[in-house]
Every structure is written in structure tokens, then in C-alpha cells.
Image (cartoon, rainbow, N blue to C red; front, side, top):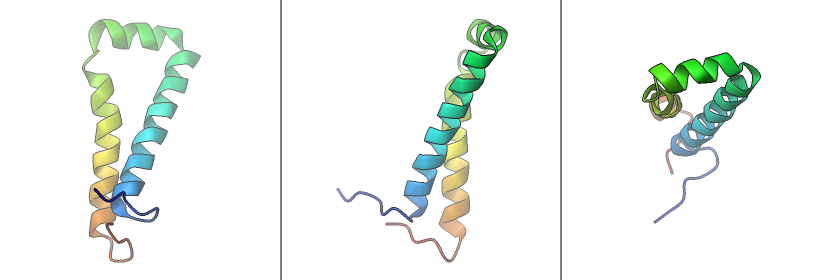
Length: 70
């Protein structure tokens, strides 16, 4: 298995997903009421936020001519 290059669409999607996860966790820690609401009413929504950002980043970068994939 080859690992993605640092400037590939796959690598950018992984980094975007990790950045989104980090930002989301910081926001949840900063406002505890939000974390309580999300865990009580929308627990399935958390993975969608993180994976959705990565998938969107991958799709955008995949179609850019100046970004190679692998």
C-alpha cells in the first residue's frame, strides 16, 4: 500500500478531516452546553461533521488540475 504524497488530494482530505475534528473538539470544550446538547440529541451527527469535511475536501482537490492524487 502506498501512502499519499504530502500534496495529494487524499493527503489534503485527511488533514482537513483532522483539522475539523480538532476544531470541533475545541468548540465543544469551550461551550459545555453545546457538548451536552450534541451528545443527548445528535450523537450520530458528530462523525458526519468530521468525515463530511474530509470527503468534501477530497472531492474539491481531486478535480483540481494542479493537485495530483498519489
